[in-house]
Length: 262
Image (cartoon, rainbow, N blue to C red):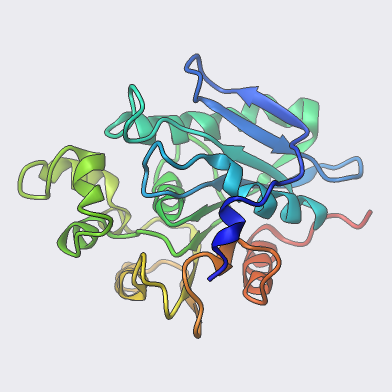
């Protein structure tokens, strides 16, 4: 486990851009060298959807992908504890931030035919959920890093003290329609390629969630694959200094294609 990645200062973004009127509706855009058009990784940070965690800790991941030739659009969004966060504001913000890529595309030479969503932990859930929102953005694929892909199962396991209930305003018995609309395992098939990357020793989001989701996605006919990382925990996946990082970069390249030679 490399928890210091949560506090490691990341290289600054090229631009911080608002995609909505709320102070938390913004994203950090990083652009690679060269004329483009640039393939894009839309990055969604984790933190169990709670206001205690923001986009700063995933900035090093974004900077590493940008050095590899990808534009990165690192979304902030309203979270549990923020005014308007939780259901449905958190989900609406992610969709709104994704739609904003259409405005950013021309001035920053972004290739909207090569957009991959990548999310970690709760962000993995949001990235997979985004793939089901066809009106937001057309994705070439999703990379879910230790994603909470099944909210009902997260509730049953009482992950992070029952945080799925905090996000949706109750358990599956109380608000079943919200679970049907928000839990990605219930939105299958996504009809988008999905790569799930998960450490076998993750004690924050257990790998059983990824395995259950994989079985359901394949049964629904989706192009889904699980890359299990033996011995890895929860944070190695977002730390470019770790050996596990190679699998993350490989998955992005597979789905988005290699960036242009500079």
